[in-house]
Length: 269
Image 1 (tube, rainbow, N blue to C red):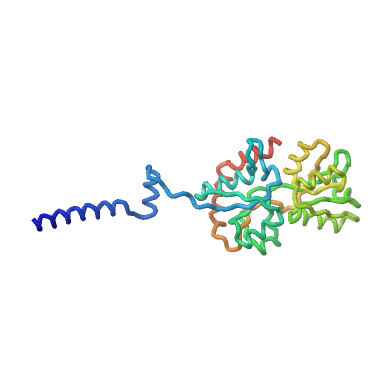
Image 2: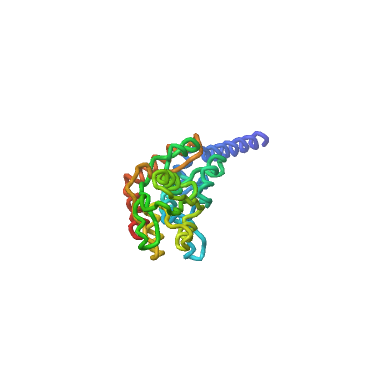
């Protein structure tokens, strides 16, 4: 009887061991099983910071009753997150606070129409360029402010910390009496312009187009390209995400998805 009991116990133990082993496997095996119906672990979160005052790149959309950050950059970030297997979280910030957020590693990356200048590269790493645009002069309609020379003696608004601020400062060295007025948000610049507290502004052309459409009393004129005004993703120094983002950006371009997003956000303005 004792021997029979031992035999039964051994048999049950063997069955249990086989069951446990059947539930084990490598990470890749488990991932394959998850694709066949087994529940998978939730995706790891990745945090993006942006300055959501820069339509059509990023802006607050309340049309659905909720405050959502949408735009060209956000769509690209969602594409990259899907390709790299992350769950995306987007945080809003003033533009001049984006690089400090990366340096403090409060966020994983920044997308905000940011140009990878030599000065910024000292503090953060960048992906490959994903889109290029040009600067423009935005001014009250009929003001005839179309060239750098026409800004002589004028107050010119720029977004604090932006590539346009740097470009305007270089311009002011050659244009007599041109005064630079840095402001935190593009919307603030447009309001200052409409209130005639500044005479003009230097804003990226795709952004200026959107604001001039919704404000028919202002106009924009594109400036000749000085080069180097492309947008890239910014990361903390030494980030491990740079390579995988570059691969996703290449796929975005090669697949034609980037062209679709450009048409969606820029050609319909």
